[in-house]
Length: 84
Image (cartoon, rainbow, N blue to C red; front, side):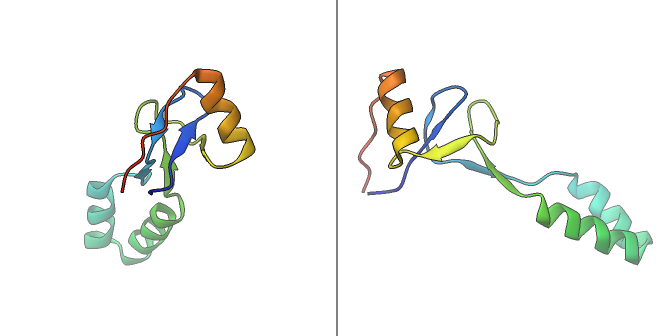
């Protein structure tokens, strides 16, 4: 069974989406014209990756197998999907 998460804001249950802040086009331009700013921007983008809810894009998803996660599942009256 896959580990699922629940969003504390909207109640979505499922797999979080990984997003990276910034803009890939800006990163390419900085690398093409300026080596040091391109490196700094790339490092910043890599360190700001985070898992967010695919429905509301808030970084507030918690595992459903925790006490807080179970409380939210019961509060929202949601059903967990058993996936293999």
